Image (cartoon, rainbow, N blue to C red):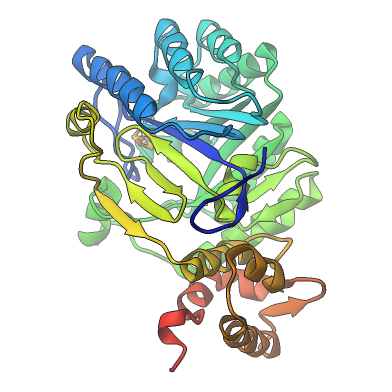
Length: 391
Ligand code: SF4
């Protein structure tokens, strides 16, 4: 399963991400590329995906697949089979995890059966909240009962791992409401729980409300929500393994861990991002333009394209690694990305300052303390990079 990357020399497992760009609703907080489903859109998507995979097919096996969106659960049973056939044209013989994101309102036994038959092992259910009023305010279309019955159907279908996504920091959400959501999630007994702080991305309805002063950001309140989950979930059988992620033993999301370790992944579909053999790029966020691009024999334009240096990858491995509870081993990252010692001397001296301020600790690895975790984003911004060593 482990292959050596040509450009960077690192050993890496390889992830596949597929972006299904359709959604029939618009949540206020949504910043993903998605379009209303249409016959023409589906046809463009499936034909474009087949061409993209034919054109850009790595010689070695993928270790994980993650289908996201949009809302992949919106695909009908036959479309799920078609998607599976396209993905099976790739080398997935050593696959260890295959996840799909589904919104509760889209789940049916037939769809679940087909997802299982194509090879999906893990379902990520976008519950967001169990509070009916909050659900409405977030622009979600499903009812609480629907989320509960969707969860039961997934369990009956027998997937080996189920994740529940919860969202916090929403306008009008109190700490008590958040604790209630955490309690209800735990009562369902999923394998994995992801908690997301609501973000105000540009071009979202929520961002417009923020600009108009109708909602406000409250960082102190957000910190208390984080702390509540950090305390509550591990006490209820869900050890934390990343700032926002909790799992029963053996049920972490391997696809995400691969990405955070800056191993390679290939993203297929409009707006999907790829990091492969020293290049990071993003597909066009328009199903028509993206599908057209793959009609040509040469790779066309990308929305973003960047050639990475080893220190870019090492820097991101440090940034994302610090969000993990296991912390980071700078020697290991240095060997993996073949980085000289100067880089780590600078980083280590920065870490010592954080340690003195009670934000980091060191045993076998460097880790953030609880105080440091609250400030993880600010710390990431201050982390020395090769470009700012001289400051
Ligand atoms: S369901 Fe997902 S893709 Fe659709 S609008 Fe909401 S967040 Fe965006």
